[in-house]
Image (cartoon, rainbow, N blue to C red):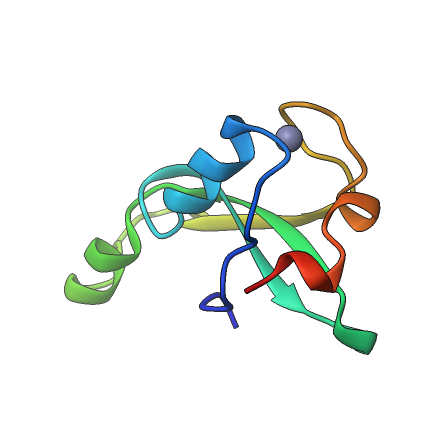
Length: 93
Ligand SMILES: [Zn+2]
């Protein structure tokens, strides 16, 4: 689901950069198609990159560790715009 085509333009460079950083360690944004052709945006925080997670054995700790945390967002964390209003399906190539 995270490999949808990207929007043709972005509300700001912050969100564009976060989208380009998906799968890397740190904070990123991706989106998924939902009902009626609209998109849901997801803020993701990764403790390790997706590649390292895939290519290494699971962490062996004495306490729970969250490798990835995600949350659905409704406004851009950088410029504050309403994502639902700005990112209409026609913006996606
Ligand atoms: Zn923005």
